[in-house]
Image (cartoon, rainbow, N blue to C red; front, side, top):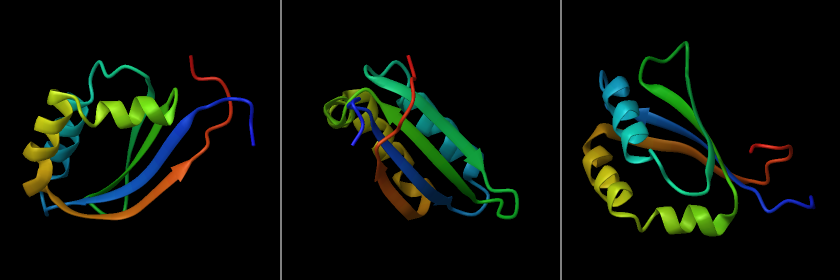
Length: 100
């Protein structure tokens, strides 16, 4: 186990066909200015126009848990629900390195 308390998430999402850009924009908008978020990296799958990966790094798991209760994040989850076809992978990680 490392000396840091960083918390990470790695996930693969699939948008409703043709809605990937709209879904990504809504996710990015609802996650702006969230305390404790160090990295929010979205990577598009080249062979699938509806799939993408999200890599998140947080100062601590507590910061991540707290963000889920924020009004802007709650509203974002509601707004994106109809755009998500599925979450295919969701893995909690322990990021190593420096992010600040």
